[in-house]
Length: 448
Ligand SMILES: NC(=O)c1ccc[n+]([C@@H]2O[C@H](COP(=O)([O-])OP(=O)(O)OC[C@H]3O[C@@H](n4cnc5c(N)ncnc54)[C@H](O)[C@@H]3O)[C@@H](O)[C@H]2O)c1
Image 1 (cartoon, helix red, strand yellow):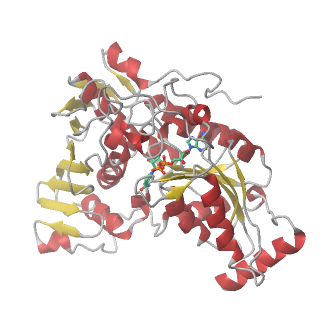
Image 2 (cartoon, rainbow, N blue to C red):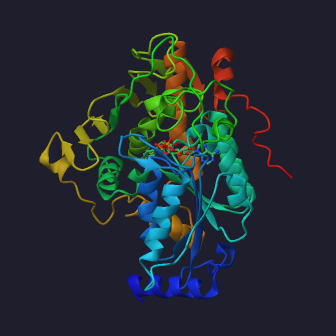
């Protein structure tokens, strides 16, 4: 059945019954033409339409509910963006309406409370596209509710967040895909395979890029503002400390405030460091040392407090040194080895010689996980129960090196790290930064 006919008949079936036709993912252990995965989307901001467009393209997916604490507002990353649960619900509904003759199909519910999404028996999987300070609790609670999870990167706000996410996902035998799409990008796979197969000899150095901050904070002396109508600010803050509302705190700009995010270190750093980890085979470990190389910060008293210039170093057991730095190219990974260098900007590969640049795997080459589409890969794994391209442990290790970089830049000293114990060596100040308290009633503990 082609996609168009499938969606048309699926939508017609739903319209006739008045309710979505649901088949629970748990009973679907292998993909078939009629297998469906019902999806709830939590967080309807800047990234949600990007992720949704991909999910809506997949025949087996039915988006049944979207959730956001924000009803609707303008101007997220760009002044044109109009987002929140209502506009995003309308986007999904319009998509499904196009699939029926009458055009009246109402295919998607909405709610302001993610607990309602988790309580629904007709939701197989959730996409968590909220700010980072919510990722861990939502993932842990979703896993306990039997949902599979597409969780946007980074995997949490702290190292402890990631550890708790792993525990919950494994305990409840869920599929979790970390939402960093580079693991499903063919040019990146080729780049990583070239390195793994020795195209540059023994790797010595890796340089990863993160984007400069694209917004400035309101500066010292900023004043609180009234909470906009239709915005549940308390629920937006959730486990984060209580703080006065300011528009620069929440939508999109949360990424520059350390109560909710790790700044561009974790935002873009998860992307470029994730590629470095894949290329260098570091997915199950972390650095032995991490240090500041000259981070810069916003002025004291500004609302924004994450690094305006990211620059840290790290050294791994195999001797490779990583340098992560802010660069206007936004994304890039360069690996230098004993026999040359190779670099990618995500679209192309350049190298010190044509032989490295055009490297192709031979019959005996080490091959890496093959996923041409991150979202399809997630859905396929929900149906097959296989491991996705970036499972929770890998997402955690990649996010971890970003957190470690942030801690080293903040403390401005060389830190020794034990990647097995996931603790700093002889540094209790740094160890105290591995977790954060949660504002009640929010916690990792799943409510009975
Ligand atoms: N993979 C990528 O390339 C990529 C790109 C952009 C963003 N992201 C990630 O996506 C996540 C969201 O980023 P964004 O740019 O969309 O931010 P955003 O602020 O534009 O959107 C987040 C949305 O979550 C909502 N939200 C907050 N608390 C909520 C709660 N308790 N329940 C329901 N909704 C809640 C907010 O109201 C907002 O609409 C971040 O973790 C970010 O790192 C990934």
